[in-house]
Length: 280
Ligand code: PAF
Image (cartoon, rainbow, N blue to C red; front, side, top):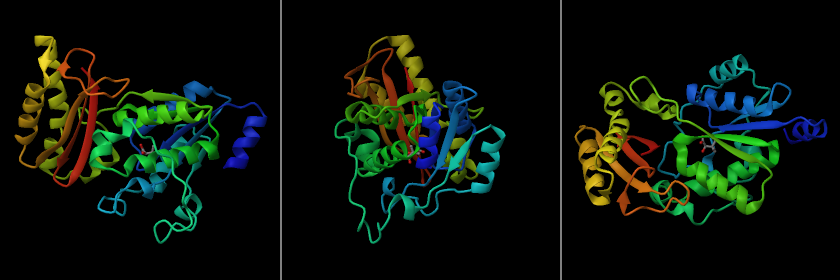
């Protein structure tokens, strides 16, 4: 992949990268379209599919994370991707077993990754920044496209790119939603029976917060957090992990909620952990 990327670069062809963990849906295809738009018809679009073990804690769903490479390749072929990069663990983390033996260099962002997803999943972002840095070095993209659904991830990657001078432009494409508002995610596959309906509570909580801000202009943080908590817990199988209101640039939590504040939440629906976010 790196040899091919170097060849493309020598020929002056722009490269767009969409990093994914596979089990693709319309949200991923939106990122691919964005990459194509950025590099043009003559440029190259690369989609990586790799379920990165270092961003999963030992208690998380690495082994059962949904995979269907055949279906993914068909979808990507239909939307005109140039290369699908599907490395193996042994290529990305040589000699990593038993955890980690031969592989010992990680990329760690130390500020934005402390809250929200980083607080709930303490080793998660170290795995994300490390694999994304590796993908940038391998694919050498001019542009890389990430989804807004992982808002904090995108902010951390932007910071990593700025701090470590990666020559790549980061684009964040909007969240794609199902008709009932549920943000598209590969993990939605886990939602069986009534859990699928209950999962729309994330979107409903965001809408409720948005309507409250519209009506009241300034709302005390504790009140809105309590209202969101009550709405989530009104679903029998839903449990709030966190809800935060923060400045979208610095990710610093706000004391009072006004229009323009970013809201993010993580909710367990049954055993499935879902995230969502929006600007209020
Ligand atoms: O957002 C994801 O799917 C993953 O975190 C990423 C960026 C592909 C890194 O493994």
